[in-house]
Amino acid sequence: MCDRIPATLLTIPVDIVYRILDKLSDLTIIVSVRNVCERLNVISDTYHRYQ
Figure 1 (cartoon, rainbow, N blue to C red):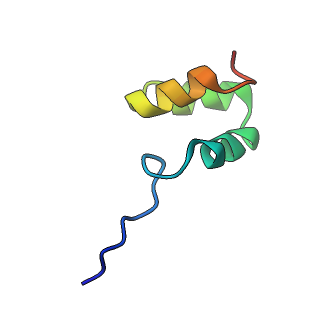
Figure 2: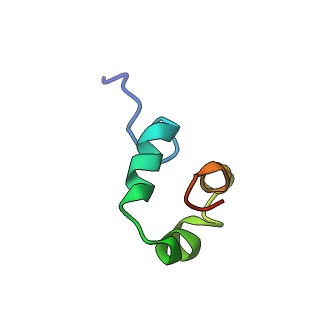
């Protein structure tokens, strides 16, 4: 059996999530990323383009 944890937005490092957010428009971040889960809220709150 594989002991690997699948890579998801909940498990990948924040800097990689930032790179993904770099590819999205501000509106997409607000509408599609905010209020999905607490971790993505925290990440988007600290994301430089969204502050």
